[in-house]
Image 1: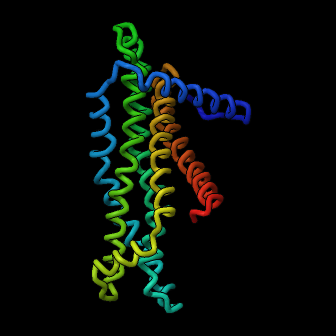
Image 2: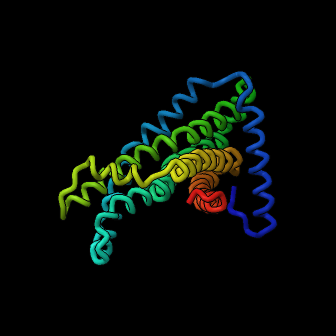
Image 3: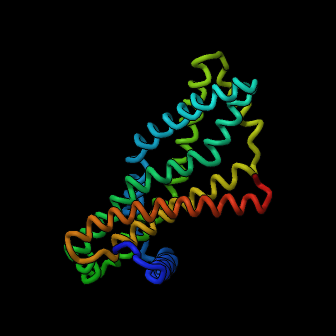
Length: 256
């Protein structure tokens, strides 16, 4: 599936993706349920992404703390570092960076895998053999990314906050309990809820767009590369757009 080259083609493809999403909701909750494949996809999306998300989360928290600390010290607000870093990581950095990492790793895999199955006519063979390829290939992957991205984000939150604690203690001495109390006392349920909810939308968008790009890839070898590439680009763009919507809605509801 190539990139849209005009506003008209962009709107047309958006409508096609919407119909693809509608088909997901129609078929996703009807028997037969591909439970074993769903759990395998959760393993592929979640467990196999742990090292990447963990390393990224640690670097994210440490770099943010080290960059923020000199400015906070200059204005005599060093005690606010845990709060500033904690809220930034939990509300914005961790969900977005985790989503982008999953889009790059998992989204490209899904796009390449489904497009190669399309080129080699495996999807058609599944249809002929009586297996619903949409339920087996698309529904399982979309559900897996929808559920696993929030879990990976929570992991990135924890690792990022721990690395922020390490950064704070490079030039000071703060107990882990005091550091955690600073963050927990400043974080309200209204601030946490949007950060959690939007990660489900991030995961859904990654899975849906990547499956769409691979499922409807052009029937040639070049289509495999295009599907993998466009899956990452479109998923990443969707993450930023969804984050913007989440911020606007949270602001309108007074949650920020």
